[in-house]
Image: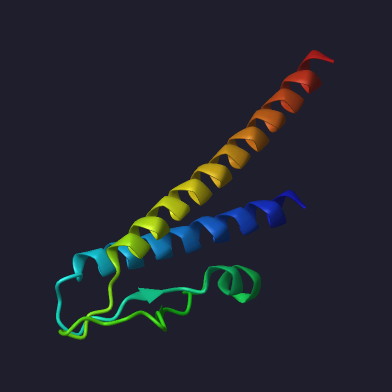
Length: 112
């Protein structure tokens, strides 16, 4: 069971990393004519993607494009960065808590 939980959290962190790279790429291309913002369907990818497989990157639909065809919205990208940071912090704290529990169990086993 512990392996399944660890694999699930690893998969979640890998998706966060993939999204972080996409957002960074979107921001880097904010002034590139014709560039279309990219993202992943985070929930779908987490629930359906095989662990270790690359997520399906897609162009973001419904964003208005400027005269140059670029549709990167900096406010949306900033929101995604903040959301990603919160998700990463939550999972990191969860993992830290689990390691603390394991350490306590091991120490109790030695002392008992």
